[in-house]
Length: 330
Image: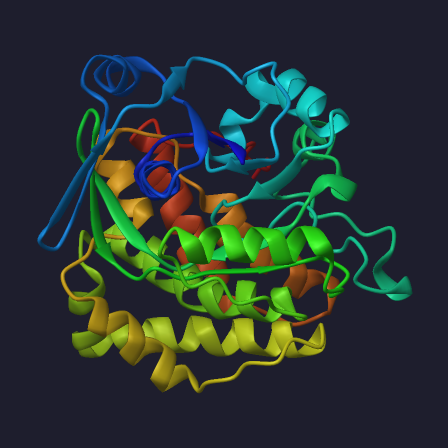
């Protein structure tokens, strides 16, 4: 299979190494020192006692050659520069798998007639994602692994190997079955879900609390979960989100306490939002937190805890130069 991973960062690099190692023709899109390191010495993945380095085609932009599957692991803010290339690959028949944090721009696509014309404005205000990644090309995924970039060209796998996948319509199509087999052959868990949005919410449910709290405090997942006050704050934010999800017919398979316990079990891991803040990178506040606030407004559920933390983390990120947003006039 010809596979392109657009964004060879922590998750993208992890995917690329495993897929290349399993025998596929893999190219990656990267930039800066990371791209230079991959070109010079290959892409290295450490995972426990395993240490794998692969040589692959490393590019600055999306390849023109047709691809079977394209994993998009860049942040939403990074898609604009790659829009034309992604559109061309879609037109050539590529299946595109947006593997981004938070709620996806395609959330309401084929969800049901009541939501046909609804868009997530906070996630894709100018339809950049919709233009770059047409809905009909998309197979959904939920990314569970935790990974980190140790240094340019080197990825560390911390925990997890599951990529749940599913069509927005819930159908079991040939392309989703091929994708599942491809991922399983590479050593991942890749269950096919008929309700992929439920799994999106299960991951988001914790992230919408842990990510901003970690960015505001500098705490790891374990520290947030073991501290009485931040544990309570996360639980209150998750309770608000659960009401919103259930109003949208989402099924939550575990309790809030069990979801928090699962995060604590990951250990001394820094969330992606905290890592971005520390590295001076763009923070995914809108996809992870603002989107839930927007859905709360949509289904008329108040979110005082989410609102407060969102206001604080936006200002923290803006001061650090990691986020830009339009202020309402006082």
